[in-house]
Length: 181
Image 1 (cartoon, one colour):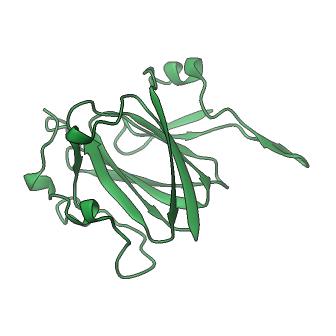
Image 2: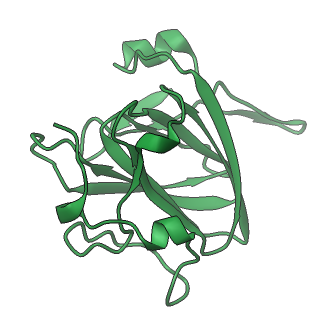
């Protein structure tokens, strides 16, 4: 496995070694010792799986209490996945990084606690799975606007507007959001 820190070095792009032949493929998507050696040594307590259609944008989500670290990958289709640093005293506070995750490239993204997370579906459909380091806590869930100009995410939109949930359409700006101390 190759662990490549992105421009916000706590967010890591992970490229597994994939073994392919005429029968298909095999790869390790998680192995505790390899991840620990790369500095990702947390316990995962929950697995999540979502299905979305093209131009669906989910996020930017985070939990102000019980923050979740997430190990993310697309198992069908392609997504543009984004992490936003919400750690108030971080030198990269309010900055974002993004990566294309697809069933074809097998890449995974590690987003540690303290970050907001979102993704945009680029293919006709996508199935997206991720491990989380803490349990879902709806009372502590928050949402930041996907289009907040203070963050300036360069979403690769194929249409004028993404498909959003009501919650995501009503997200707060970074200026008005609760962040991590």
